[in-house]
Amino acid sequence: MARAVARFIRTSPHRLRRVANLIRGKEVSEASNILRLLPNKGARLLRKVVESAAANAENNEELSRDNLFVARVMIDEGPTFKRFWPRGRGRADTLLKRTSHIMVEVDEKE
Image (cartoon, rainbow, N blue to C red; front, side):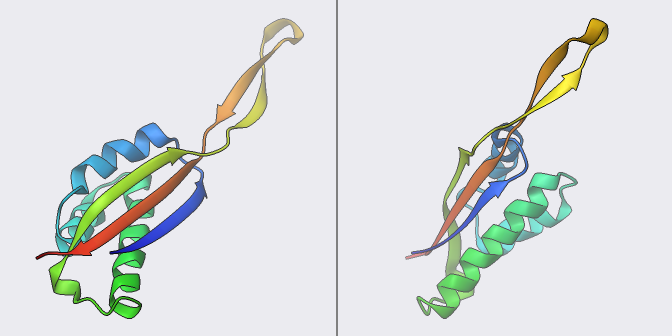
């Protein structure tokens, strides 16, 4: 089992989880094709992590890329950046800029 991690990604975990649910349990080539065709920013970021995990499996674990599938995808919440947004009458609202951590594990089919 090989894995890849991307941390402090500037996209909310909710948006990434919607995309991650589409590729869980699929073969790496099929997951990559699905992510390539989706218009979401999260799909582009998730595809890089899936490709990295597949490359780690090939080079470090010496597994065949043809037999790999996405065993596990975890989207965790990272730190939230707090910014201020000006409102009327001199007040301010808090703008929360959320970040995510992505972890993808690939494994060989038996």
